[in-house]
Length: 97
Figure (cartoon, rainbow, N blue to C red):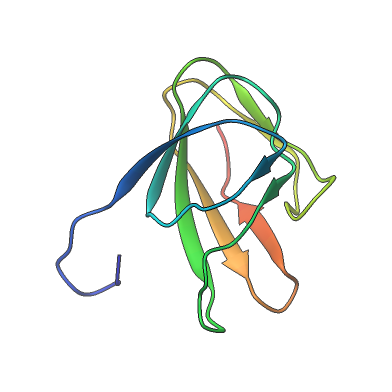
């Protein structure tokens, strides 16, 4: 999705595992409840990126054991925004209420 340009979000369904690879979409729907430590960023060409994450089967935790900056637990069916920073090579989760 390109900010400021009308577009549609692309969605991909992925099983939650310790390391998530091959995510080339705007929104990822996680099945399962395995904690996630690493999300390999898409080829961003040197740019930052955003990813919307939604767990489908139960709560899913992000841990700091990989490239996620802050540990959080996502509630089932609630969207969480992750922002990728090329400089620190980390995903930064948005606030969770």
